[in-house]
Amino acid sequence: MTAVKDIFQLIDSQLKEDPSRADGIVAVYQFNLSGADPGVYQVVLRPDAGFVVEGEQETADCTLSMDSDDFKKMVDGELNGTEAFMSGRLRIDGDMGLALRLQEVLAAYNSANQ
Image 1 (cartoon, rainbow, N blue to C red):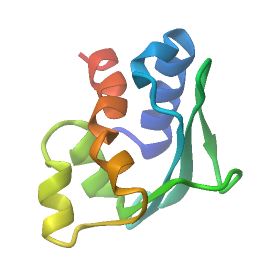
Image 2 (image 1 turned 90 degrees about the vertical axis):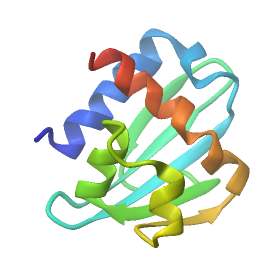
Image 3 (image 1 turned 30 degrees about the horizontal axis):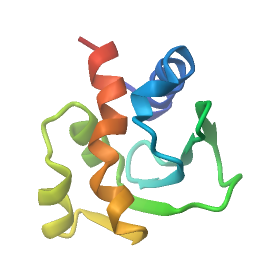
Image 4 (image 1 turned 180 degrees about the vertical axis):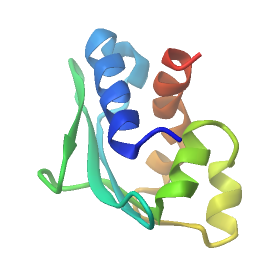
């Protein structure tokens, strides 16, 4: 199974290659991942750039806390974000509207991974 760090590196390279993938979202998403492959990552989206940082470097607009295995399933499209939230496998703090647009951001990973 792909390491979480590799997933975020791929998202980072896709956003740097084509910032329009973030579809005009200006936000900082923070992922607090627990479990077998833990870590804290931020996806930073600006009007002219998008990138990923490891650790808590910016003030997050939307924080998502979940198990690293569930995160991998979510980016691979095996776990629906809404279902994960409703079943308690995903906790969201901050801007709920941004959380709903997360799938667009993760699509940058999915299209690169095809």
